[in-house]
Image 1 (tube, rainbow, N blue to C red):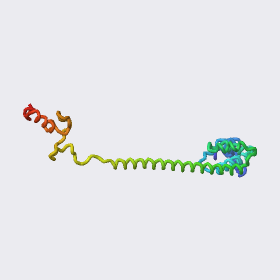
Image 2: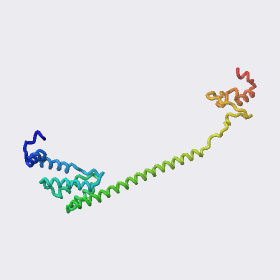
Image 3: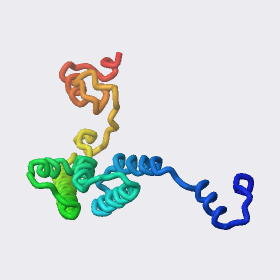
Image 4: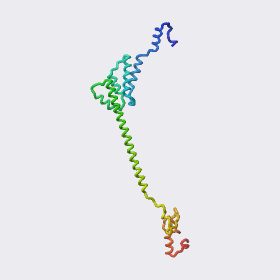
Length: 210
């Protein structure tokens, strides 16, 4: 400020000139406050009482600068800046004949905000409860399914198909069925039915092989 202040030995003149350098334009300040008032809206996540009080304080500053704003105008402005959750509340207000004062506006908005939050809590509880019930139903189905599987009686541990009449075990040959009886548990040369057929025909084992 040293280069822009006039040279003087009187404090009063110096302070007057200093005030001129820092004085704000009333028009500019009114514009800033009006912009803040009209663009400020309540998002529904804080406290609506605090929001309305802040708007009242902004209007008080605007009035101090000489611009007149009535309480009715402020009530309309605040109501129009409420979120969608207050849609029914706004419709009910528009059907009333009497205008609300600022104190009535605060009281009614606080009550409506409490009602909306209680309704949201009930909806959340219902969603959680229904989700848990659905999960328990699936769990019961899984248990019943597991119970039916546990009751299944599988094949015995011993493989009777691979045992002959005298108790000796034959190895099952996969992919090579008996050409006589078409069973896959043995080869043709080991087939009892084939051996019986040879005896009936009077054919020896060596002749059958040839």
